[in-house]
Image (cartoon, rainbow, N blue to C red; front, side, top):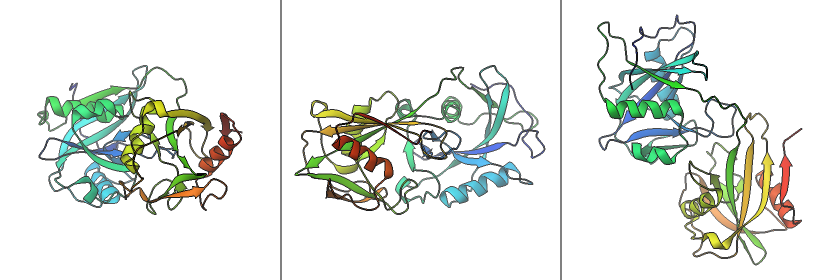
Length: 314
C-alpha cells in the first residue's frame, strides 16, 4: 500500500497541499463525513475524511487544526502525521497531494456538531464497500488497516499512498429516490431541519441518494424505514416519475426517481430529528410553503400523468 517517500509538505510546494484527518475510536471505527451533493465542490455526495486546503502562509499542521475547528468545533490533541496521499490523473500525472493526520476521538457522532456537510458517522472499514466513498479516503483507510503506525523515513518524511483517477470521462449523474405516499388525497411531506445544508425549513418528500450497489427502489425502501419508520415492500412500489435535474451552480446532474406506494405498514414518525422535524399529510391541491421547487414540479407532473420531465437545463 505504501510507496516511495516524499519530503515533508510545506507551503512552498508548487501545488497547494490539502489536509485530512483520519480519526479513529477505541472500537476501531473511522469517522467519515458525507459531503454535500448539491454544491460544486470536490467529491460531492461522497463519504470522505474531514479536512481541507491550506491557506496562504499556513503550514499543514495549522491548516488541519483550523479545518477541524471549522467543521466540527473540536481540537484533537494527539493528531500526528500519518501518510501523504498523492492523486494522479488517468495518465499517471501528478494532480495534488494531501497530508493525512491520524488522531483518536471517542464521542458519539450525534454529539459532534457538524458545521459543514451533511452527516458524520463512525464506520467499520467493512461497511465502506456499501458506501459512495472518496477513492483517496478509501485508500487511506486500507493503508491504516494494513499498517496503523507506518514508520517514517530517516528524515522524518511520511510514507506515500497513491490513488489514480479513473480513465472513464463520461458524465455521471447522482441518483435520488423519493417516496410518494398518498392517503385520502393527502401526501406525506417532512419539514427539513432549520440547520439542514439542503433546503432548510422546507417541506420535502421522504428521499435520499442511493448508495453503492443499491438500486433506486431499494434506496427508497431503506430511506423510508430510516426516516419515517414505515415498512414498504418492493412489490407495492411503482415508478411514477423521473425528473432530470440540473441544479443552479452544480456541475453534476441528478436523476430523481419518484416511487408511489400502493400500501405500507405503520405511521410516519420522526426518526432523524437532525434532518426532519415533523411529518405531515398535506392536500395535493394545497402544498405547504415553502416546498422544495423540484418536489413541487414533480408532483405537478405526476398529477398530469407525465412520466418524465427536465428542470434546470438551458
